[in-house]
Length: 116
Length: 112
Image 1 (cartoon, each protein chain N blue to C red):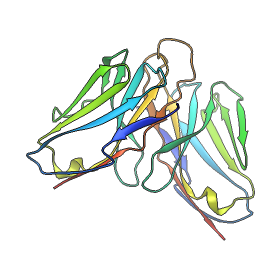
Image 2: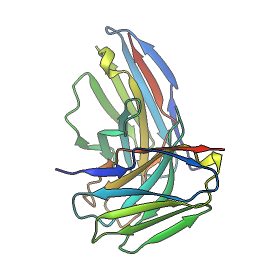
Image 3: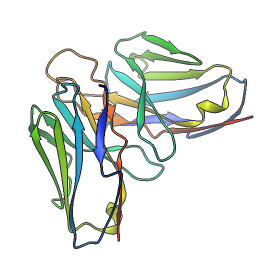
């Protein structure tokens, strides 16, 4: 199984809503990532979890709250978002960051978020 | 400041022609990745280049890495329409604390 599965694929929410994006992988990877991608732009790193601990937060606003309940799951909780937060949110995973490995990231299909 | 630049940003080429996409980066790294993205879709890993002089080929695509010049190339041979997509290079600057920085992307359109 070489898949990273993201749900939902599409999400429309109002600025006062609370929602969550979910990501799951069963490749035994111990690093998981959230990226944000605006149209026609490269992906931008938001968060990195290594061994279920947050290792990188790229100064993301607190209205985005990541959670890693276990080594296979990664959530992104959304609250009080702004229309400019509308984007494709990509989850990715890779092998253990602390050992010699390729560092290759495997991406999910993404969750397309629209904030009204 | 870490920068990863690609050129060209847009490339329109005829089927059967050859072309090269360039990826320059600003800080020492010996690990570089190429990804493909179709419109509205996720990123598909194409190549992982882990050392100076690394060359990898898959079908009509060939990627190389020159860490001294801080340059990677993605060469397309005898392009076909199915290769139309956006191509990103991405550079890992900090082994063990992975921060993959993506290039600006090259939107490739193959014209029949």
